[in-house]
Amino acid sequence: MAVDAGAAPAGRVLMPVIDGEWTQITGDPDLGKYTTEEQQPVDFAVWQAANGKWQLWSCIRRTNCGGRTRLFYRWESDELTAPDWKPMGIAMEADPKLGEKQGGLQAPHVVKHNGKYHMFYGDWNNICHAVSDDGVTFERVVQPNGKTGMFSEQTRESNTRDIMMLDVDGVWHGYYTAHPNEQGSVYVRTTRDFKDWSDSTNIAFGGEAGTGPYTAECPVVAERDGRYYLFRTQKYGPESITRVYVSDDPQMFGINQDHRHLVTSLPVGAPEIVTHDGEDYIVATNLDLKGLRIAKLKWVEEKP
Image (cartoon, rainbow, N blue to C red):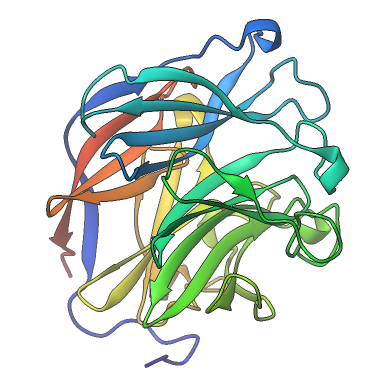
């Protein structure tokens, strides 16, 4: 049941803690003619395909692909925690004929629902959708207007991006970021069928994370013991930081309300949480932004 937007969670609150050493699972890929010294693997998705192999698609930025310089590259592995996953090549490039910004692909996220794999991603201005039967090869879903974009936040220049999907009691919540008026917020829209979406709600803004355009990136929401935890990134690289907020309501994590919702911060950028065989893992960008890494994640009770 949703609580008042300003209400602090009552009772037991958990704190996510990185548990042990990191293992590097990918490096800086060879993109052939698109390769540059400045390229960086950033926002990504991790999931297990129908054949049992683990898949990782990452947005590679600062490439020579043109436009906004971003494309998707993929790796795979027989084991989630194995080092040095196998590079599998470029997985997807933006398609301007379908309304996607040249070089604008951002932040894929994959869920499995009703026997199909669903990928959600940004095209720089919009959130888009692709589907797959095997979890390896995806086909874009083209909307009735002939474009792939499903929705954007207020204006086409607000850079709607970084969507993450969570099933809450049969209703899918799509969490994403955008920065209308150069102010970054986390938003949510809901859907039951990935076709019809609710209007957006601003669910996290400001506080010590700031209000700049990149202060609410890479939102990830996890449910633990009936409460919801939002991971919200402010910086990549050597000074990586992601703040974590708690709420009893999956549609409100605080508008300048750190004193009620902020739990902790982690020295990671663009994290994704993967649960496998009853264990939680956190995957994040390397501090040098030249690869991706994985570690165990545990949840401990917050001290009063």
